[in-house]
Image 1 (cartoon, rainbow, N blue to C red):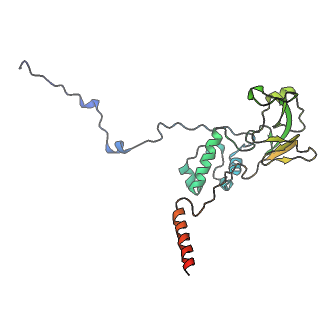
Image 2 (tube, one colour):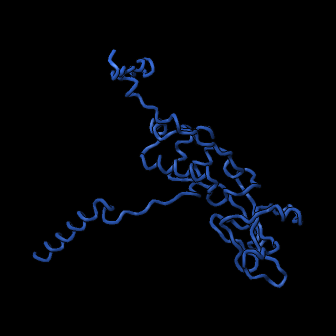
Image 3 (cartoon, rainbow, N blue to C red):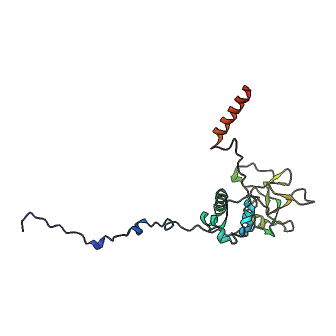
Length: 234
C-alpha cells in the first residue's frame, strides 16, 4: 500500500431509501392543515337552516343538503359543489359568512342571548356611564342603552351588570329603539321591541354591474360611442 494513498468509504445504500415514481408524484396537501374549529350555535342561530336563511341569497333552498351544524362548518367548496350548491360565487359567499361566524362576527341579532321561538325582546334601560370611554357624563351619570331583556322581567342592579348593549341598535329621542328589523311593541312608545329571525337579515347585497362590469366596460363603452357617432352622421 502506498503511503499517500487514500481509501474512500462509500455510504451504505440502505441509508438512502429509493422512492418509486408514484410516491414522488403523490402529494398530501391536507397533511399539515389543521381542521377548522366548529363554533357552537347561538340562541339566535340554533341550527344550519336558520343560518342559511339569515345570510340570504336564496341559500335556504339548500337546507336539506346541509342538514346539520357540523356539516355546515365542515363541508369544503368541492363537497358543496357536488351537493349542488351553485354557482361558484354562492359557495364563496357561504364560506365567507361561515368564517365570519366562526370569528364571532354576526349580523343584527347575532349577539342576542334571550331568544324564544326565533323571537327576541329588546328594551331601553339606563346603566352607569363608563368614564373610560371619554363620552360626556350626564347629570345623573347614567346613559340609555338597548338590552336583550323581556318586558315582563324586572330590571335589577345585578341583572344590569350582566347585560351588554345589543349591537346595531341605539336609542333615539327619549326612549325609542332604532335599528334594522326592529318591530316596536304597542303601547310602549318604542321603548320595547322585538327582533324576529327573517330571510335575508344578514344578506350582503351584490354590487350592480355598470356597463357590463370591469371586464367588458371598455368594449361596451366603445360600442356605445361608435353607435352615437353613427347616429350623428345619419
